[in-house]
Length: 453
Image (cartoon, rainbow, N blue to C red; front, side, top):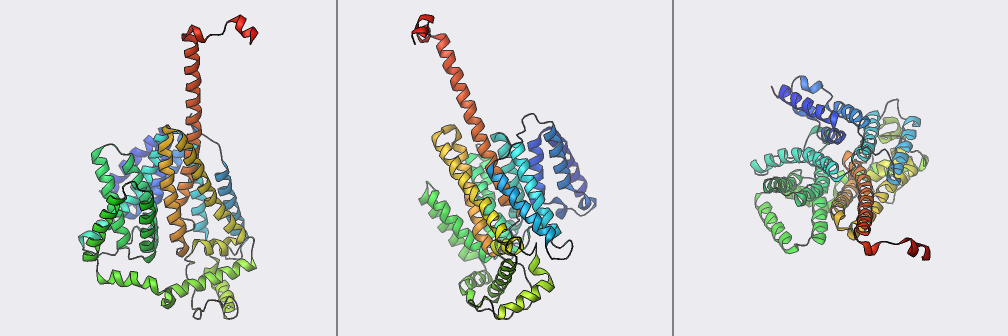
């Protein structure tokens, strides 16, 4: 029954998406971040919901008269990064097809970014994409967060299987939280505001419930950035103290033991195991500086054995135990470095560096035009999300996670909307000026005056 009901609703939304490309894009983003197949138990598990959303978006875009098939520097750098990863993937010494699923995921992500730029041409369409992101992440966070609350801290939050482990789940929720709060500030309806704020609070609970040390650090960074930019610092401090007080009473002892181990990194074997992976990936990059070793190269047993054996005499400035078995990279920077070389890491950093540059440019324009003030608020939230990605990602294997790249596409769309709105405003100003001249005889220039002029 669940499969039949959901499939019917999804197909109805897909039919609407055929008429409106931005609704297709919203459905695309939502089904990519929160795959419905994981929550169905019958025939629905085999239905490619995300592919249906993509197909509807592509078809709708073909007939969308308002589409904007242009690129900017940010998207060009993103395409260069994809090109470098592609070259590395197809020339790597890894077994055929090794890392293919991750590579296809990156291709789909970049495709989604381009379509966000093509379809999002105004604020309404832009907000539909933001709602899609927040519905996807918020659904998973609320589901797990409520279980954590009901069990009085006994439930261990992990999120949907497609998100990964609890550490990645915490990072995903953290990155969505600034956007959820932005939507709260934009909402006018009281019921909607209550719902959005409730979701935001449960997201905080869900991050805590992951028992993730990186999530705890990210939550602290999010609080610090929010406090710095907040106009109601006293209210924020009081609210946070209340939440901390409640948390201290309800959280189990095992949570405090887990978080306390963050300060004992030198004695934590899991941390030292990550250092081993970082060393191996660095050695691979030094041997293959331009293209790296390919996606998940450090997971290939033969490659791992060769490079882990070299750790006894190389990169010994940090003492680590003898390597035992390959693990995930646990760092977006070292993973990109080892898999795609120094060239790949450079392009990866350039993409997000260009993102920060675009944010500054958008905020400057927003500060000079009150009608664009919303765009300054939005990109400030996106900046916070990207900062959280770059910080929490330093200890997580998530360089190809969808959300930060979706934000890159949104930044590109916001800049284009700003330019379009400014042109419209200038055009209306000129038309108003011409109308004033025609309506007021004293502003007209006679033929004699024109000749004199």
